[in-house]
Image 1 (spheres, rainbow, N blue to C red):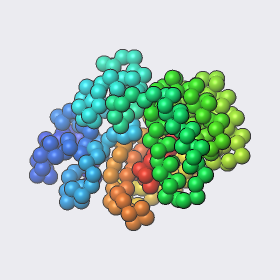
Image 2 (spheres, rainbow, N blue to C red):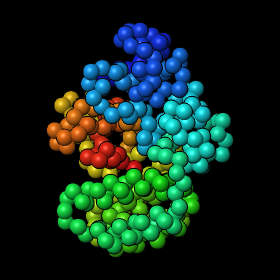
Image 3 (cartoon, rainbow, N blue to C red):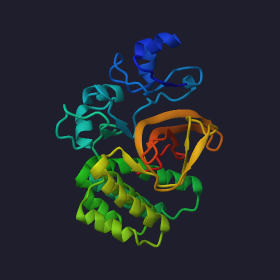
Length: 302
């Protein structure tokens, strides 16, 4: 069940209202201070439906938007990763001074990625299976590149020479995810802009348009920070985390601000799996709503 925190409420009053415990709420929501919860925050209330869902916390993965009073220490405990991993993955210079509304990349583990090994893995996978026609196998390949793209992002500027090499690979999937990686890194570097400019002239219209979006995001991040994103596919923004709710169409390239990540919805018949949404605000209209993810729970924006 979705609940929007009201002015003056905290987890203790919410738990009392729904006859549950604060621990029940903390088990499925990333919240650092149970006594200080901002009004308007989306909170999942455990019920008979959520008992059937995986124990994934609302608020995090692949990113987390910092709330007032949050700290890296608290997040590390909530998400079972170390403070050092958070610092390194986000190239944080002052760990004790992270502003409210800052968007952080949340790695899926503390494992340190070797860029040479990851590059070899991408090349080998592309050489062997990039041209498969089996849809299920292709989805598995896309899923691997998707999750590993955040490993490149976690390396920051160290990933640039490897991505510059990979973006010229013959496998279109590799080139596509290199473009996404550059868009997520959002580093205004001459060599990146050149590579994206070249990609914007690619024969594949999707890669070409994605490269243009990546360059646009790099420019936008300079002014709005990393919370600003652009949709990479046409989509819909729903009033609730449920595709049966009312919605408005979103064209590719829609500008949005992330508010809260990883909100679980009901099982969708299309994929016969739980649905996942991100709570966002449209930059041009201040409209808020839920943006559905793809069929392997991938975000559909950079």
